[in-house]
Image 1 (cartoon, rainbow, N blue to C red):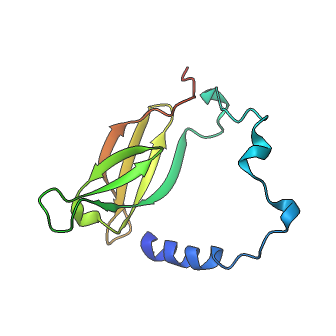
Image 2: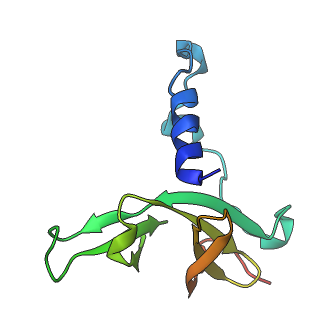
Length: 126
């Protein structure tokens, strides 16, 4: 199944959530005394992080400066403009310190369209 269609179905499912009770709501201030920093990559249970991102437009539509991009942890990654408004499947390989960006082909297979060095801040790589 096309992951753009699957994501649309998923979005409809999660937008149908019941409301939280006031006592169940947590705010950033509630966590200010907790150490949330993950310092040692060796304690991760997996070596890779998988996620989807929608490709957004940068600059005016139809201009020479137009291109697509995704934002990952405040890093803007430039992509071809023909991917604008489509989802890409991203993989961060923690051990290799690399980000791979894939698209889904008509047959359901993935095609890597970009691979870049990617380091996550506040993580010690041993």
